[in-house]
Amino acid sequence: MHHPVQMKPADTENRNERKLFIGQLSKKHNEENLREIFAKYGQIEDCSVLRDQDGKSRGCAFVTFTNRSCAVVATKEMHHSQTMEGCSAPLVVKFADTQKDKDVKTKSISGASAGSPKGGLLNNLSPAILQQLGGGGQNYQAVASLLSLINGQQSQQPQQQNVLGLLGTGAQFLPAAAQNQYDALAMAQLAHQNQLLALQGFAVQQAAPAQHQGLAGGLAGAKTTSPVAATLASHQQLASLTPFAGGVDPYAIQQQYALLANLQASQVAPGAAAAAMVGNGDVKGPDGANLFIYHLPQDFGDTDLINTFAPFGTILSAKVFIDKITNLSKCFGFVSFENPHSATNAISAMNGFQIGSKRLKVQLKVDRGNPYNR
DNA sequence: GTTGAGCGTT
Image 1: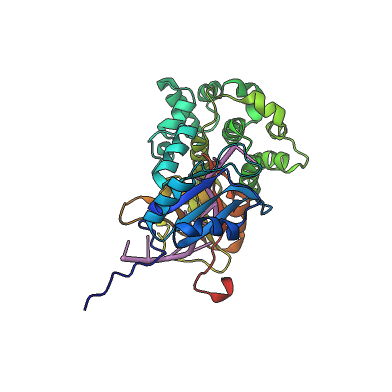
Image 2: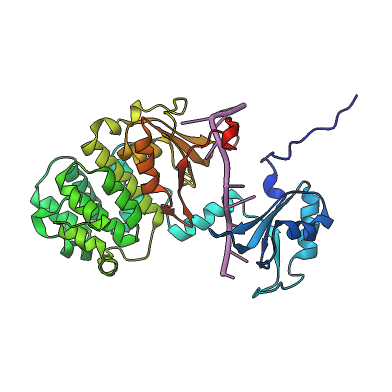
């Protein structure tokens, strides 16, 4: 007897070569009539219109056929075949971007280098950041100085001068001694991009040290005694603070956050920084303490995940999923905290954090094994 | 004006 090979439709293996991107689609179309349009080319496995938060069509869609040949024919017959209502250009029917295509796009937007931040504090500064910070070897020293300052050798004036120089025009908003290194880093980050929400999350969870409360309070709209916090609260001033020429590098910002996270962890909660002691995926926290994180950078590893989320609480485990065939990250992972409170804070700080053209999705993990969650 | 969601693996 000869059985034909049964291929599960959900097989992601060759899904990309059966999946079409439909652009310049009338926003009046929904999944149902989109199916009607494409059904004549073959069996459709999956069909979905991309929508905004309000559920309105974004004028594009994905259609996945069960057979690639159907997709090929659909492309040939439908691409540029008409201009739909409300569209500025003819219908687009083409194969959807692969993960590789997306990575290329992301990198061209962010300008991120191949530098991969791993390990300790110093190593968290990727070449991309160093370049962003000013490019030269001198700046590397300045960065190192910044780190050593933050690492506990406080009040070393010469080094602080270097740090201020490093921050360029932002330095004038650092009123001398009152300022701390977290503010400096935060300024650099905020000047880069208005990540107020994300930073607010960071600030909220690190309520203990008095010097941080100004920053937290300022961002939260409360009264503050910190001039830097006041400065940060003003978007207009943020624009003038921009210390880095050459545009935004969201990936570098993420790295800076990872750095900041690590710094905070090492000072605010020394135990939380011990990445080496964190489990790698098998340990789960209590209900509501487990996060599902999507849209991680391609080269983000377990350690990066730990570094990024350690400030929010004690991490029981952190795991980035790796495709065993390609050995590449699947760009999602899990972080389990000891308690739900940490997870909640992490969500409010990090959900929506922009990296390239994507935003981090940070949600409570859904237990797919539990029918009540489906 | 254009590329989703995915939920602790092999």
